[in-house]
Length: 255
Image (cartoon, rainbow, N blue to C red; front, side, top):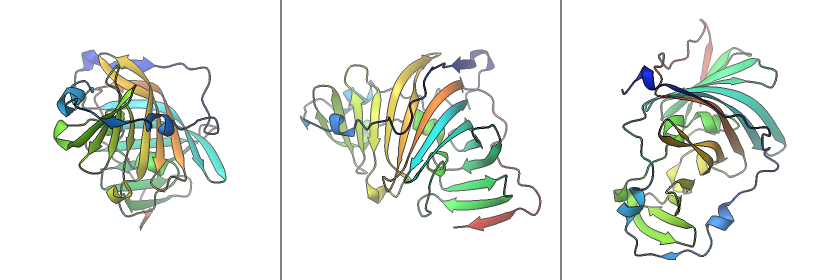
């Protein structure tokens, strides 16, 4: 792991207004119009996309999340720590009470409900994920720095503002022509991933790392979404072991 305490950065983002889920509009239609095949080579595009898979090993931060689903909107504060293998998320409600912890290793999600004192283990590709679980089931480091290799690309399209990369997996990645930053990732239903689309906005440079501070994640069934506003972020901090210490006699349910 590449830890360098001297280069640790605490990056604070102070924004006066938190955009609510009701006001958030999808940019999918605008980005997905007017595309035609292009002769631009895939490796030329991917070379412009920030890839920190080696230089960025850990993240730690805080954010506000708005969970929007049919008949319900909920605001929570999340604290997250992530390396390339695991992500740990702690959730607090609007009045600061810790409601639980969520740990993912990429294959399963362990959810500990601190209030009701039970735990649940869910297979990410087979279980039914909802609410904040959609965000917590993903490796936050991999999501914040989504990378694409040219060997994964089967076709390239472009319009006036974006490149659209068609991946071998069926996924589509939209890249801004001006700065090489990923704006949107779409996954096909066949991926069995817990999300159908991720939108990235408000990139900022943090000690040389260009990372998004606003991320919107749409559920696989497209009925719910999570808007995450990153308020503070540490890059490459030393992390304690990413685990959830369950109290004795905690019931664990599997589904």
